[in-house]
Image 1 (tube, helix red, strand yellow):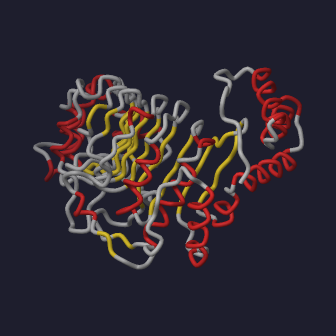
Image 2 (tube, helix red, strand yellow):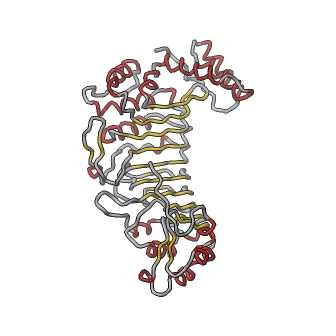
Image 3 (cartoon, helix red, strand yellow):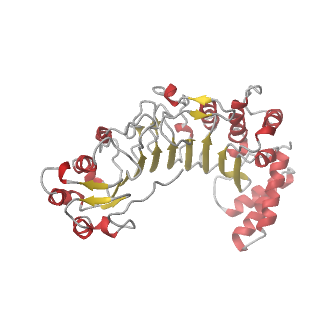
Length: 394
C-alpha cells in the first residue's frame, strides 16, 4: 500500500486551488494528482470518463481498497482525489472469501479497528470500518449503510463514522431491512437477531451528530437505532420504524430544523399499529420549521376518520404546506352525520396546504368530484379517487 497526501487540502471549490493540489500529489508520487487533473478536464470540456475511472481504479489498488470493490459490498465514487459517495450492503455471493479480505484490510490499514476474525458476523463491521476510518473518506458527501449483522455493525459503523469530522457529509442513510416491524433479523450466518433486545437504550450508543455539521438529509430504517437524534441542522428526515430507543416516531430528540418529515409507521409482527396518540408529539416547539409531512406509508391504530380528526386539531397543521395521508375511508358509522358534511366542516383547516392521499379515497354517500371540490389536491393528484396503490418496496 502506497502512502498518500492528505495535508493542505483546499478548503475551497476553486478549480485552480485543486489543480495546484494535484501538482503536490503528483510530486509526491500520489496517483490522485493525475486523476484530479483529468477530472477537471472532464468537468470543463468533456474528457475521457473511462480513463478517469481507470485512474481511480489504480488509486484504489495502490491504497489497498480494490478488494472492497471486488467483494461487492461497497460501491463508491471519487471526487477530487477523495471518496465522495459510498454505499454499503453486504454482498452474499462473495462471503466465502471475506475472511481473507478482512485479514488483508486489517494488515494493510493500521487505522482499522481490531476484529475477531473467528466470528464472521463481525466482518461486516470490518468492511465498513476500512472505508470510514480511511483518511480519504473524511470528505464523504453521501453515505448509505444497509446492515445485515446489525447487532454488531450498527454500533461499530457509527463509532467509525464519529471517529473523525465529516465536514461535507450531507446525506446519511442508515439501518437494516425488514418486512414486518420487530420481526427477527437474520445474520449473515443464519443466526437470529431480536430487535426488541434494543428497546430502551437503542442499538447505537455512540452519538455521531457533532461530527456531522453539514448533515441535512437523514434516512433511518429499523427499530430502536439511536438513543436520540440531536441535530438541529437536519432539513429532511425519513424514518421507517421507530428510530429511537423509546419507540417514538415523532419525538426523536432535537430536530428543530426539519422542514420535510416522512414517517412510515407500519403494523408490526405482533399485529400492533402505531398509536394515533403519537401524533401529539408533533408540536410547533419540536418542529418549528416543518412544512411537509408525509404519513402516506403509515398504519395507525385508528380509523381514517380518527386520524383525519386528530390532524385537523393538531397544532402543527397551520404551518404545513403539504400533508400526505395513507387513505381517506370514511363511512356513516365512523362519524355523527353525513361524512361529506363532516369533512366540509374541517375543509377550511386544510385549505392552506396541498393535501394528498397515498391510497384509497372512499367517502360514503359522496363521489370523487364532491370530495375533490372540498380538497382539490386529492382530486388533482396522481392517484385517482376510489383506487388503491401498492406500498412502495424497500
